[in-house]
Amino acid sequence: MQATRGKTLTGMPDLPARPRRIGILLAVAAGIFVADLVSKTIVVATLSHRPPVRLLGGLLTLRVLRNSGAAFSIGTSMTLVFTLIAVAVIVAILRTARRLHSLPWAITLGLLLGGATGNLGDRLFRSPGPLRGNVVDWIELPHWPVFNVADSAIVCGGILAVLIAARGIRLDGTRDRVRRSPAGVSEDTAATGPDDGPRQRAQEGITAQDRPAPGAAAGGSTT
Image (cartoon, rainbow, N blue to C red; front, side, top):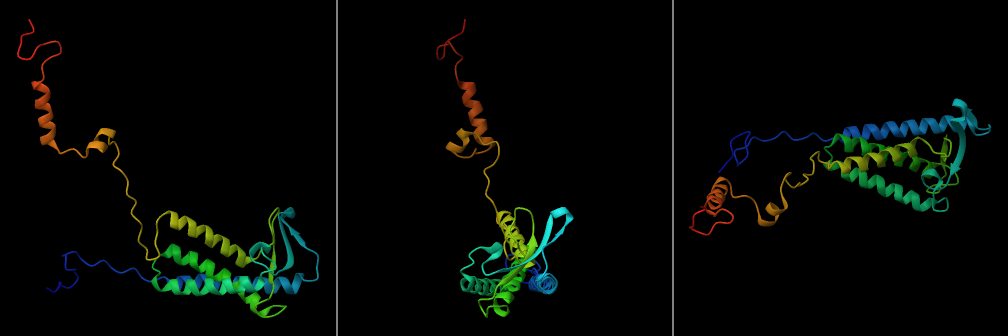
C-alpha cells in the first residue's frame, strides 16, 4: 500500500527535515582559526623582543611564550602526542558533521574545530619543526596560565558541549525524553498498581457502606 503524497504510511504528515548545520560549523571554525592566526602573527611581530605589556591596571598582560605542550602549558614534553591528538579530534569532528542538524552543536563543534586547527598550525609550521612546533601563547590573566585565542575556543566549546549534553540535545537536533514518575502518586498506589478507575472506586464505596458500625454486632441493632 503506497502512502499518499505528503503523508507517511501511518497517515501522519511528514515532518520537514532539519537542515544540516555543516556550513555554520565551518564558518565558526574558520573565524576562530583566522582570529587566532592573525593575533599570533601580530603578537610575534610586535612583542617578541619587548617586555610584557600590562593593560587595564594589570588585569590583562600581553606576553609572548612558546608552549610545547597542550593548552595552558600542560604536558610540555609530549608535543608529538598532542599533535596526533589534535589531528584525531579534527578528523572526528569532520566525520560527525555528516549527521549534524543541531545549531548549538554546530557552534560548539565549530569552536572545538577552530581551536584545534589553530594550535595544530603552530605544531606544523613553527620551530623547532613539523609536528613538534611550539604554540604561541600571549594572553595572561591574574592567577591563570598564559593562553591564546585557540585555547579560549577549546575551553568554551568544551563547556558548551557539557551544557548541551546535559539538556539532552542530540546532534540531529532532537531531544532525549526523560521519564518521570507522575506527581502525587502515593506509596500504596505505587505498590499495588494503578487505580482501575471509577468502577473500582464505586466498588470500594459500596464495601464501605456494608461494613457494620464500630461496636455493633453483625446484623444486630445499636439500641
